[in-house]
Length: 394
Image (cartoon, rainbow, N blue to C red):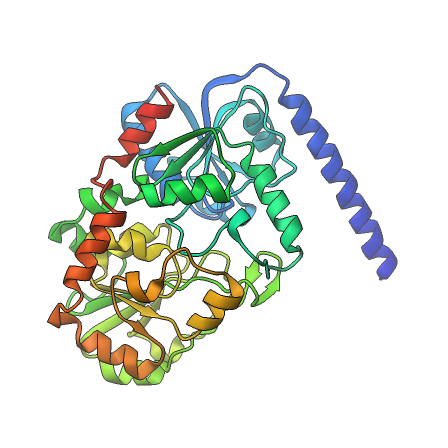
């Protein structure tokens, strides 16, 4: 058994080397001009900033050939849609990726991919940072790496980026330092938030609720927590425990509310929600969180950057931070003082959470939220995609 395992490992290593050589050779062939490869969250989604840029270009830049790179597990869902979908790491992907004039992605590509000289790499990133990033991190607790190696690999990959998108001046300063980025930075607001301005209407929200099979007579709570670096099954597969009393939540809130659960794309947890049928709905695999923002009346999160995006809607936000001290002081570290800057209450247990949900209508955080919006969302107006495309693709 061990012998077969060793053989398989050896074959995999040699195939990977061959693939890298093929990518390098193909990258020497003539560029496929006006060809763009889009990818979101390692090919796991059709979403986020790359999707917003793509949708704008479909309307306004039809002379471009645009492909979407999807992980093999997601490819089956998109191969028959009106997208030019290519399977990540397939031979077809290799040829198109290595010869494309542009790459657009919101997360790091594998380090082994050698960027051809003819390719412009647009990194949109995927959030206004609360948690420390890359070179700013004091310690790294992720599996399969060390602090030194993580930073080296991150910055080596970041050195390939030709453009970097920033949602605000606060992020611009952090990105330049944390990614050690000194090329073209486009401070435009996030394209992914255009929808929060362009489709925020009663009619559109009702249509979305119907398409999601959600009750229209109840308020909607979106619960979107992040992952914990030191809680994992393996590299890239993280655990997550819902540290709230769901029985108490259902008993107290079910007459007025439902909860949409949206776990981070790196979380590999399968949570049994059958006892909470009709109250908690799992939307972790839903295509794009932007529509979940629109249908929800309230956001509950922790340290995820989703609260920066959600603040565009000026709707209530509650921070469920039961492990605040550990996460902030030992695990990751923050750029902001969350206790001072958070545009909503910080709570640490289920009782406090229920109390704040029931107190939502007293508007005691409306001024704080308005100030937060002015500081972090001032560039966002439904036109960020246009600004990005005009600066890069013209």
